[in-house]
Amino acid sequence: MSLERRLADLSNEDKPLVASRLANLSDLSPEELELFLAAWAKTGIARQRQIMSKLMELAEENPRLNFDDIFCACLHDPDEIVRVRCIEGLWECENRSRIAPLIALLREDDKESVRAAAATALGKFALLAELEKLRPEDGERVQEALLSAIENQREQFEVRRRAIEAIAPLTLPRVKEIIQQAYESDNAKMRAGALYAMGRNCDPLWLPTLVKELGSQDPEMRFEAVVACGELGAEEAVPHLIRLISDVDSQVQLSAIAALGQIGSSETEEALRKCLEHPDEHIRQAAKEALEEVGFDREPLPFKFEL
Image 1 (cartoon, rainbow, N blue to C red):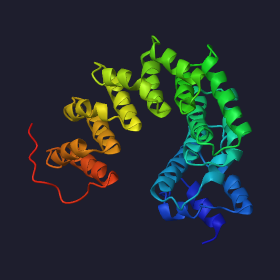
Image 2: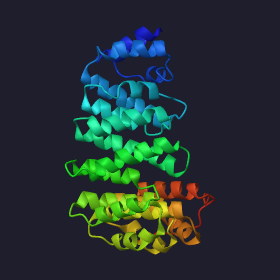
Image 3: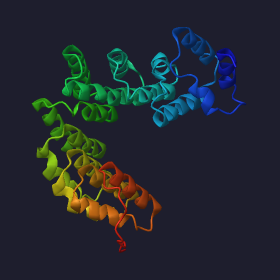
Image 4: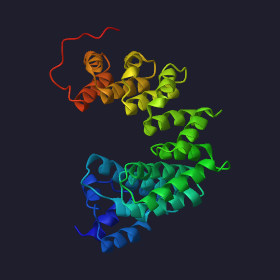
């Protein structure tokens, strides 16, 4: 089937989206991309949103599929949700040519959700800059754009929060001050974002704060503290994380198991093996994945989980 025919089928809302045909949109040539954009302009908004979401799913499931050119070409689509999906689709992209469009969206887009997504996507390049895998001038552009969003008091909290999370990998004194100020904010979402940023900052100085927040009354704060402890590989947090396997919030439970897998030790292995006998299938599966991550995936010992 020709590309024109496949594109016509994709645009037809009466026909189901077929994964195999969407997969054929991977690595389009410049000429094929032009054909795609011509068909895209004739496609309804609801169908466009479905296509972008499905392309994201396919790219996550199969790393060999590459829809970056499509995502980049549609970054300025009239629809807010399509723009967000395109930004999210570029999350794994490390091509420096994507920096300028993302900065432009962060600075100029009229939708909060798009600016927030752009800030998050720039976090990939902030990390690359910290690892010295990005040109210094590119790292400076990313840093400047994120700092500008953070320091803009007229900017929405969500955008500033995502910018703080994105800039967190940079080991600069200013960045630590920003994270601390966010943690002291009156805005609950900003405080939660600060905990996430502490994990991305990877500085042990945050550990006392994170351990304290593992006992927070707010499940979002517990969740973010757990994730950050996992990022830090904080063995001091292991006893607290083990207790959180029985947390009342399921997301906190699963994140605690994942964090234990990231930390890895004899104590975490024992706790994770006990989870293999847990009555909840989600807990068992999370524990299995955590054990595999740290190479503890041999035959489980005959532990019985005690409720």
